[in-house]
Image (tube, rainbow, N blue to C red):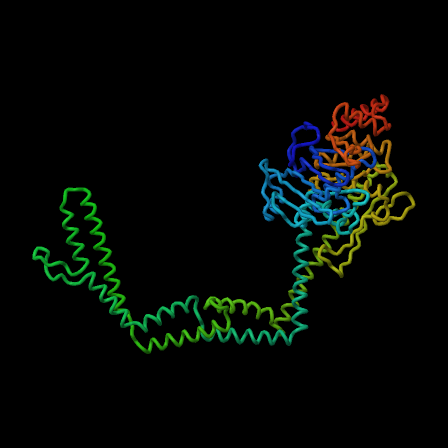
Length: 593
């Protein structure tokens, strides 16, 4: 990461928990030229004048984690880039996936992510110093980041995500049941597909089975053994060259242990290696010199080795068979095996390839069996698998219905404090036991009646943008202790809210920040007062180029009071505004404990 361009801010030391971003650098994006943000743990708020570029922080985060690259956001420099430093616990599954992609941790143990976008729309992603497909980063984002804004409510609007939310709320035992159901459903679908395939293609499968069966019978008739082709080749060569091999072995044996024609004292040299070595050993053994005694022992060992080799040569000669009938038999066997290898194995694979084909063919033959007995057995397996699916699906559905009431009640209680006291939240769980799907037998929908008398409608249709953001906030608060996503981003979830409800939004965001890193773009001082880290986006004309530029700075103490006063009254130096700002900070500090 580059040197920091925002002011340093000390924060209380905290454990990384499920993980958090410590730094974010944005270059050439929208009005931002080059800034680096220090993101502390807990709640970070981003404030600033309308049009200053606050949303670019959210855009940068989304881009970093695999979001769609919009070349229209790239500045005139022609290239935009975002870099982030992610601090993760040692046991995080993100590390395993990152390692699979070739990523390495930085010197401090953090994981560096980067993304670049050109004005032409070309995009590249980097993870731990390695270039990776953008899809890899997007895959990691599912377990790292959740972005919620008025135009980014995809998670909440998808029925599948609503079902996942309800399942997660139902608890660990329910999720274990869901895993069992998924396995049973996959087994049932595989059996259904296999049965349909065998019935619809019985003639073709029977013909294919005949081909495999004939090949297996041909191999079985020869009965090749592993490595037999090599052994036969060696044996055939030995039989064909038996006379030459016997002569060579006899010559070598006689050279090692042949007769001695005289003794050394008579002036005649030994005629074999064993006798020569023995004489040399005796000559040295009587010496008093330790070095010669050791050499004498080495010679004694050599005599033993030579004698052993000579014995093996004698056995070799005795076993050597020059029988022409046996040679013909070996050659016939080699020819039969060679024919199998040519027909059933890849070049160079030998008998091993033939045996591999036979094993594969036997497996395929069992899958091609279209006899009445095989089909009856398959029908019984299919029906048993479907019965298991029905049983687990009914249990899963019952668990969802039991969880739906409590989930809706808790979300409704949170909404009551978010200026939606009259809103009613409920879950619709419609079961279709005759149409089991991979996730169960239920269609799950989160419904919202925004005010009395309003019909309950799917939440993404029954709520305005601001209401939808607050519903998502309420859901995230309910899930605060269980949601595995470590970083949550909320883009102006306080739109259209003021007064006491604004303070309640701040309280809930602060509560979320106890378990997660929360980044919030806000225009409300009541929300900003709860922040652990307060970032301000400033936009000023660039006198050199005639364009605007954005800077982002962290504010503390009196600078923070002035920013809150500006948000409250439009005047940073207003004494009344500053007094109100200090009061908000005191209330927020007391509420956070």
